[in-house]
Length: 437
Ligand code: GAP
Image: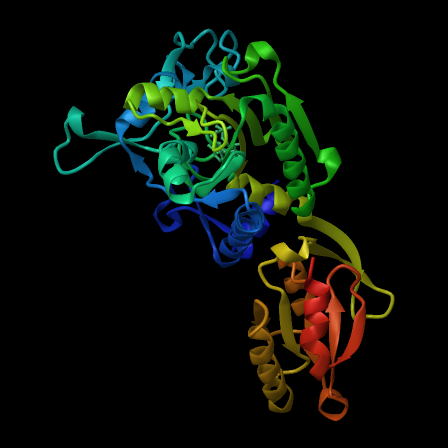
């Protein structure tokens, strides 16, 4: 974990938030490479689950919503964690994260915890200049409700027939009592969620469908099967309205914990919004004209946890030969799947001499029309390869003194470190073919 956190900072994937002011507890900023990585995840998710399907539509709804939404969804009443406080050092913990009869993890005091109280996780703010109770609003703690409250709009404007889904990705906020483990649990994070509406009698079939879609997604993200556990939540621990919930857990270096979730929510959300808003949110069967509330399958993905897991899975330390005959050194290489890498190709002139760098710069300009590209002419070629390995660049293209004569460049493969001479004229096609996943 520490190695990945260090690499994230050193290479510009993830920085501590507000760092020059001493940071802000558990907040993180995505740097140039992290922003690319995160965007690649979000774009692929949107392409795969929204654009490539005929049964899905996407929305982007407001972060601040009418407080009645949170009353209806149960968040105002129920969305809380049990909180205990150490009477000696006043540190606060989630009661289910500590042994409340044992010693305080912070100061070691024994039998020092207060009784647990429920602490609501929603962030509060005020709408408009008057900071009074009537103007209190909450930042959404999940993207899901934005989709339920637009169910009627979607039905009316898109004329979808069951089964169909609404998808959305975006920020969510939770005033977590104990955030931590880098970007695993933060108070501001991103979700990608789908509310998939089905006929009540078909829920099991669609639950299986989304389970297998989530498996396929994880495989494509580069996550090894053996690092995952699909945990069927037993009846007593599931929400009362859910007949099945699967937590997809990952074996993080700090323990096995949730990565994604899949829940059958019945008509819980729509029924509550009907009751609270007085709106008729029923679906009309186009053939029989029967009206009913569809049931919902909800697959949910954390974006930041996706980034974390992609980085943990990609990180490798390997022995690699140096330029010196018979010598080797440890190389750090991020073996991201190729669709995910922030930089696809690096162009590296063998030397800074004008005769090479002018050719290399032209080549970079040409490649940059097709791929996310970097140009680097500083330090030795070995060091430059290592730098590209560390950020996962799949191909390094070296322009050398022979390029001018034979019209070829050397292409080095990140994983095999094999080098191949490729005619410059064929390079774009070669890279396109090899980068396709
Ligand atoms: N609409 C259902 C829902 O929000 P959840 O299990 O509370 O379900 C869904 O959250 C996903 O959001 C989690 O599986 C996780 O990936 C991500 N997530 C939840 N809380 C988070 C936090 N504090 N920091 C980072 N990611 C979080």
